[in-house]
Image (cartoon, rainbow, N blue to C red; front, side, top):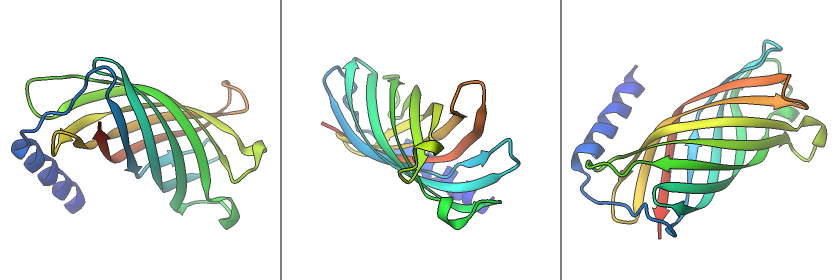
Length: 179
């Protein structure tokens, strides 16, 4: 509860003090990354709490529409029933985010992304996922924004009929540089 309170105080103070405006127009390039702390449930009764680091690059293909690609690195903080050698995963993702250029400083966003991840270089462990990120981008200058939000995702293994995992990332923290 204490962490949630600190998070809310931080977000509120940034929202109230930020007066900068970021450029959401066509052609604007974006570089940045995010950290998430997802809780994951698997049908095989495994659950885990992980940390994901995700460097990203993107370009606004239209006003307020960002095409984004990234690399995902994942390692669990806690995982039930998984041997130590199988814990690290990596992947790539591609998606579209829609930002709204509203009157207040923080810009809400929502998107759809597809990702591909696996353990090490083991092609038998491939998962394909559908992700839905949502949150707010809070400008700290004319070219830098902090992002806060959540990401919900469903991952499939082998074929779309077999759900491998359902994941909720309640702690999405990101930074993006607009140029």
